[in-house]
Length: 317
Image 1 (cartoon, rainbow, N blue to C red):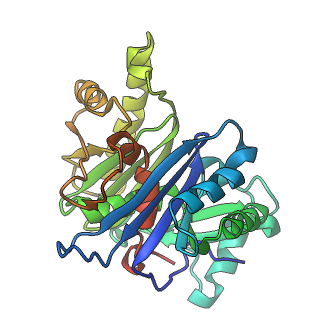
Image 2 (image 1 turned 90 degrees about the horizontal axis):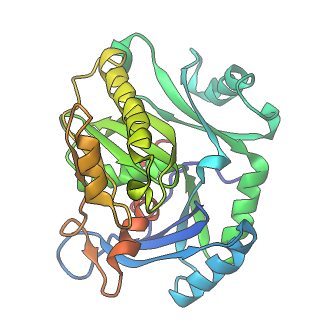
């Protein structure tokens, strides 16, 4: 069984792969950039819509072939529907017994028998909750899903090195491109299911999955303000929780991952009703981008780019 979040010796190039929202997203980042700038190079980036999930294998194989990525190392990002994420108090046991203890602790939270679940963890910083308790994030996904991903990636002629969740792929974006020394909120607003991360000093304190229906034309719809207000309520609750329950200083900056077309308009609309301003992440100048990668494709592929930016430093096993 491939271990989720397992550390690997990263080669010069890593492919990030995501299948979610009825589309395949793929990106390759080269960390050993021969151009001399020192910045990583986004070498390949593409997206392909799916008419049905049954097309995923065929589409991924075709993309790998057309982008000449055969044999490359791959970090696969689970779809939000593939897993559940829990924050729990760490069991007071030796490290060698931790995973068994966690399985016992979360078994009643799972929607599957615990023996059918692949489970892994990543830590909450020690100073969260004012040091009252040591907390952990636990990811649980069906073992059958992991087996299917191993088969899917292998048949596409990629070498599966690791499996991540969107929360950690987005964390990689924050670590690479943004300064969160004084705290940062980062939101990735997508069609079905959005993610909010609150981090400081490169450490992920709070992450939330938020149910959304943010189609490409959502801002021109009649119910945009209703959807916006519902979204803002969830964002503000997370900001308040980070401050009041986790004992952290107030967040003063909220950065939004770029969307295909309406990024700046949506950021301005959210800023009107949130307690802090919202800006849009621009990765130009922070990473070298190979010629021929369209702006809208790059903006759509943030999760895949984040997965391809994974390094040992960014991984909690």
